[in-house]
Image 1 (tube, rainbow, N blue to C red):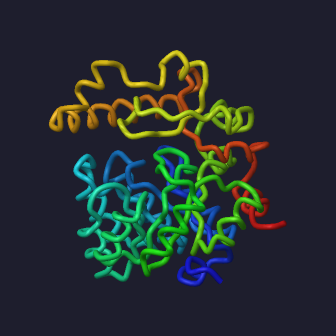
Image 2: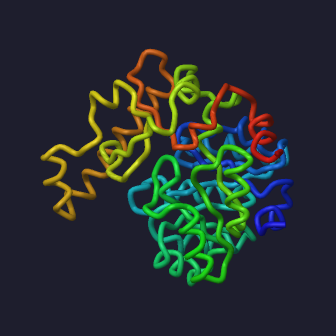
Length: 312
């Protein structure tokens, strides 16, 4: 039994990864019913009222779930997000970006465990020293914002250098890929992209069908959306937009103050772009996905996806 299923009393040591604009309450509920646990990004909710409505529904139905919080200064909504999460409670929090110290301290006061996204040993050690309960190794195989080290290698070096559990992410979509993570001594696995095309997802049909029609060879990396490397499907709209920064963006990125401002502008712009692409039927097809897209053969319920991954 892996740390994750033992700690959270799950049938399978799997977290449905928090996905920007994709993850929703219905997906979290279906994950719970399928023997895994879902994680909901706080930044998918524009207002505190909307976030608390979702939290209320999940807690009323006694659903096991986690919350994902961006903890760096770019998240100007952090204060009301953490306030609401602590008010209603959850089973765990995953922190992304920035210093997780405040989140760990506040969460632990309410017996909420905290996992921290990490991409290297140095940051993993800092999170361990701050009291993180486990780390999530964000690898170069991950979808969305990714790391630079392949999953198997990252899990190995993290396990050798820290004493807290290591969860792995990236490239999982079938039985073989899932069990390769467990054989690599991962304490649990995060799976994201293959759930984009689930029937419970509220993204438009074109986005879901793209998950079926495109393959891992169609995934490209761009920094143009948020300023941080992100994986997207290489659609005609992306080919037209380009994936490389223009000369103005490159100059602005050399200045520390302007770089931070540019990143905030990009985040807001990318939010609107990706939101329209995900939910508007007639918008340019700029869609986030990871290389595990190759495992998506049809649009199906969460339960069937989980069964396909966990049963040989």
